[in-house]
Length: 288
Image 1 (cartoon, rainbow, N blue to C red):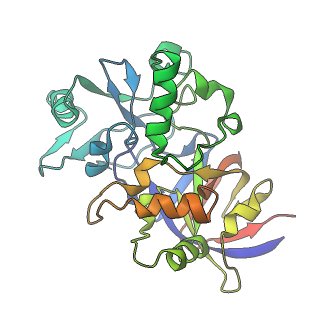
Image 2 (image 1 turned 45 degrees about the horizontal axis):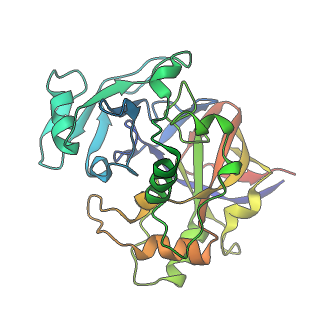
C-alpha cells in the first residue's frame, strides 16, 4: 500500500451534463456520489435521455440542490440558465425552458427505476446514421481514431446509460493534478480547467508523481477515506471537453491534444467496492 496523494476537490453534478459544484465531503456507494447525476434532460422527440455531446447548451446551465440530497431519494434542484434566469425542477415552467434552450420538446426527469428500460433506451436511426452520430458525438477528426466501443459495457449499445443511473459508464471518475500538469505542458496555450472533464474526485498527487498518473492505476484498487474503489478503465474523451462553460471558451485544441498525447483518454473510471465517506484532504492510497 502506498500513498499517492490527497483529495483536492470533490465534485457533484446534480443534472447530467450541466455544471455542478464542489462539496467538502460526500457519501459514496455503488451508485456513486449521493446526488450525482440524479436528474437529466430527455429529448421528447427522440424519446432519449440527452447529454452535452448532443446538446452542448446544457453545459451553459448550472444546477444546485436546495438542500443536501439523501441516498434513495431525489432532491429538488434549481437550474440557472444562460440568460440568467433560475428555474426550479418543481416549477411548471421548467420543461418549456429546457425546450426553448435546445429548440425542441424536452423534459427534466429524475432517475427512473432500472426496470423502466424503455426510458433508458437509446435512439437508433439506421446503421449508417447511427455510426455517424457516434463519430460526431466523440468529435473526432478524419485522421483520429474512435474509442474502442468493445471496452464499454454491452448494455450501452442499447441504452444511453446503465439503467437505473444517468452514468455513461462507471459511476465515478477520477483525475490527478499530475495529468492536468502533463497536458498543460503538451499544450500550454490551452485552458486545462478541471471543469472541462467533470471528475468526481480531483486528486493532488505527490510531488514525485508525473505524467498520466491515474492511467497506471487501471486494474488496481484505491482507498480514499473510508471508501474502496476499483479503477476499471481510462476515460475516452469526447466533444464535451472543448465546449464553452462559465468563464471558459470553446477550444478544439483540448481534444486534439488528448487524442494525440494521451491515446484519447484522460482520467479514469471507477466502481465502488466498499461504500464510505470522502472528505477533502483525505489520503489516497494505492492498494497492493
